[in-house]
Image 1 (cartoon, rainbow, N blue to C red):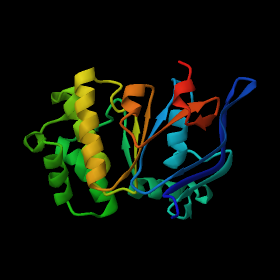
Image 2: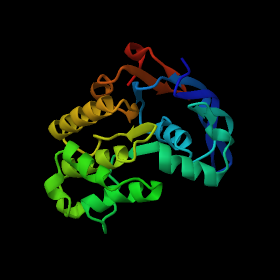
Image 3: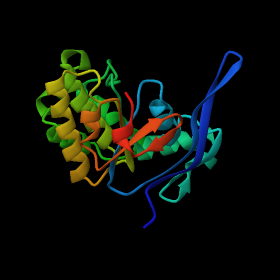
Image 4: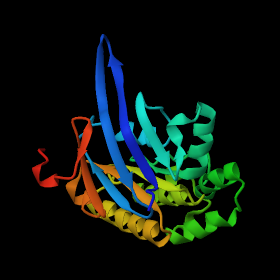
Length: 227
C-alpha cells in the first residue's frame, strides 16, 4: 500500500551568520494512512522545521515530500498555500486562536476558505464538548478549553494530515492528559493520520510508532535515546 506521507532524502538547514547549520540530513520516512506517529526530540532538534516542510510553509533544500502521490516539494508557493489550507490541520503549543473571533468563528474560517458547510463547526464543537462556549472569545477560555477548540479547528475541514506541535507543552499534566485523550480519540474515530512532535516520552508513548529526531535523522531506538 502506498504511504500517505513519504519523505525522500529530505535536507534542510539555515544560515547562522557565516555558518551553515544543517537541521535535517537526508531524511527518509513513510507514514501510513490512519497512523499516529510521535516524533521525539529536544528543543532545536528540527521538529518544527520538519512540520514547516510537511505543511508546505517552507520548501526543502533537497529531497522530496510526497502526500498521497502528490509531490508537495515540487509546488510553487501559491500552490503550497492552497494545499496547506485544504489538506493540513495544525495544532500548536500556544493554541494560535484568532482573538477577535469567537470560538465558533475560529472554526468557521477554515470552512469558509474551503467552501465547506458551516454545520461542521457545530459538529466539532459538540465533539470537543464546547458547544456552550461557541459565542465566547478565546481570552475567556482556560488553556485546556482553548486547546480543545484548536483540536476542533484542526479537524473541522476534514484534512488529509493532522500535525500537532507540542500540543500539551503549555498545559499542566492533568489537563494535558485530557487533551491527549481527546485528540487521540477524535483522530482515530475520523481515521486521520496524526503526526505529533513532543519532547515528552510519556506523550510519545500514546502513538502507534515513536521516532526520535537526533542529529538530523530518525531513529526508532528510543531506549538508546540520550536525554
